[in-house]
Image (tube, rainbow, N blue to C red; front, side, top):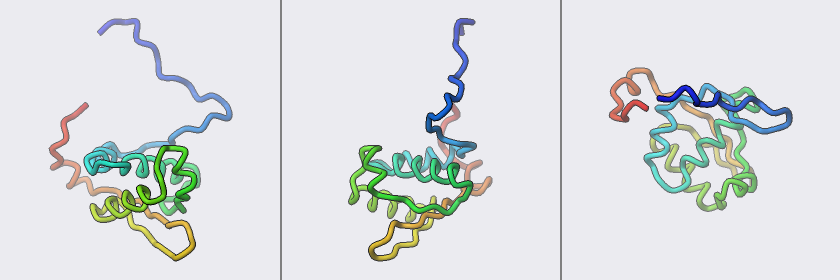
Length: 116
């Protein structure tokens, strides 16, 4: 590895960013589900960092900025919920309320995902 690698970018005032830590095992599990599940999962983590809460309202209209349509968002939320990565509270005419679920240390230790 060369010594010319640059440092990661610094925060620029006013620019939106993903607040961490976000568990890599959670992202890997969401990424394996295909479709737009990773997009929806990352957006849910973004909202969790923004509101400092693991329970957030997910606006399907805001997800369109990520290239995720309303039906794709609902399918992705259902897939993430089915795989126990989050819980979804649904109410007719309202945005879904999502509670992110951290995977146990035991489950991540037995993961077959390779280290980066």
